Image 1 (cartoon, rainbow, N blue to C red):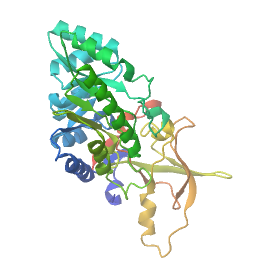
Image 2 (cartoon, helix red, strand yellow):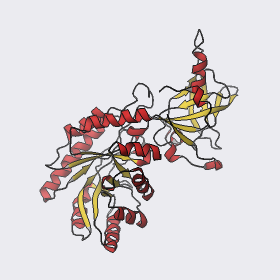
Image 3 (cartoon, helix red, strand yellow):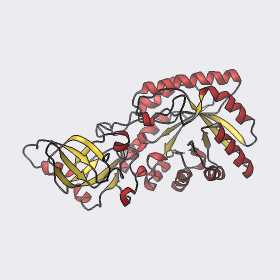
Image 4 (tube, rainbow, N blue to C red):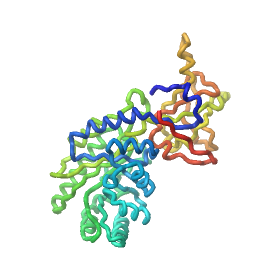
Length: 389
């Protein structure tokens, strides 16, 4: 990603920069892999980035929405996503959120427990409406990712155990205001090994065989999302490998005639188009360690503190200085830290940067997903602005 540092100098930091051209390329790449399949439906997972401008661009490209709250449903509708293409997931749907979804006639509820099913039936009956539901089944497939974002194990706060699938389906089919339309799965996030998705396909095929034996036919199979991105080399792989991802399901799933296949991609759509721009406040020289203290912190990008995640960091000002230098300066190892009063407010330790000065602009890359959407006002800090570039 190329930056016009002259323009960036005038921006109040910290702030988010969103590359709308890269977002368009990413959306085009998804279309290229799915357009030959008229039964493939891609829903953008709004939890990754709910910036209104970003949502409008994704909605205008013809995608559906994956929502996990009533607020996200409202954001999706405001951005132009068709209600019929909204999927509503989440383990703790409040009554007002369920009523909002029913009145909006959303495409489907992804139901995560028997108890939730009973409440949806009760509220749909009160409103004299019908709820279209898919059941989130835990396939008991391990995912090669961080423990905090692995979600498909047998016992999880998410979803229904696969051994309970038939009983839950039978119960729902006896309800007067429920339309059972499919099964939903999601095994985790930031997955880069296609073997995880291939294993999911095998498990879904097994469960479909069970459905066949029970005489149950479902219209939808929803495989969730989870495709990861290259945080280490964002310029080498700005667009994820959607071909490998979608091909895994095309080759591995044994869909029944007429079945529709749904995907819920979030990070893979928006992560690489986003950058957190921050300014160096101080360069602190310790006895053994040097610290670059910046004006962004875990309040603007919590992933490093929460998951130990590492984002590429570019010193834009040093790059500009070095452009005219005859010899590239020797990198220095710094701890890049924020101003928040928490020891975990660290973006990177022993990170190699060119000699860095107070006032330098740093670009923390791949921040389009779970940056702005997870920002907080901790320490009474104002929420940062977002700029389209």
